[in-house]
Length: 312
Image 1 (cartoon, rainbow, N blue to C red):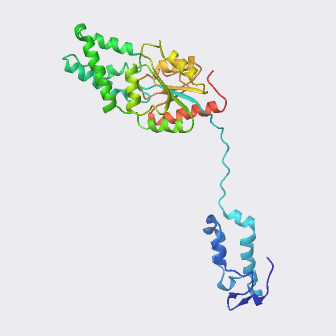
Image 2: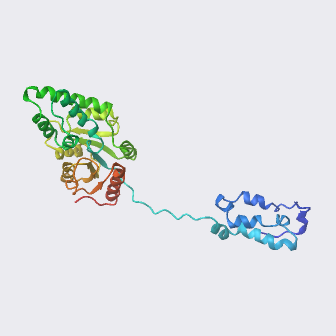
Image 3: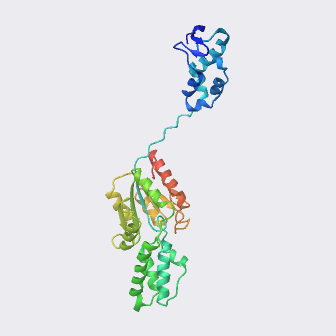
């Protein structure tokens, strides 16, 4: 800055065009600098040093102010520098197919009481919760065969129908998604991923679940095994034909989820908190030990395929 003579300073007031107070300088500094050593050095200057164009005895302080304000390297060193974030590999949209029981839905809250209450009402022996839970996620015919074995043939159809009706009622009144699951589905859908459901359950069970928990708007396709499909391999193959988005990931808690995924060239995320054993989930590409880990497990797979890796 060009130095000016004393005539620019009269009784502490500025007459020259270049005269201005240091307080004005400070007010224009970036926020990180206001609490920095630079600002403290400005504040330490004497009142008579508040103006440029000073007499000789104060030029040293004036030079200090001028250096602070106009020396860009000094100011830059006073501002905390945030390193540039490393560029991340973009995650391309994926098809993510979810099992229902033991993956999204706490099935034990509805099926166990439906079985126990109904059998008790008909005066039949009541199985414990663990016995009932063994059939969750398995093909529905295995569950029905087990039920039939506990009921006298003469009343078999009547009692099984009563169990099924109560189960559907409880899906609506007492059924719950695992904690955090809805938020995971909503976030994935909002990011452009295509979601689908694939269950071994019968049609009315799956339809009631989807409607009761408002998942229809989030899922492009829903497949229930019913009597139309031999197993999940065929259901997944149909979903993959219907939806051309790739890569594709299957999320489930039983062995048939993992096997069906790999047989269809999909990555498999195991819901280790569901009803499957550790052994039957051992071939999964990644396992979420709790509902709270499910999203990070899915995103680990998304990053992997986003980087060009896929299941062989």
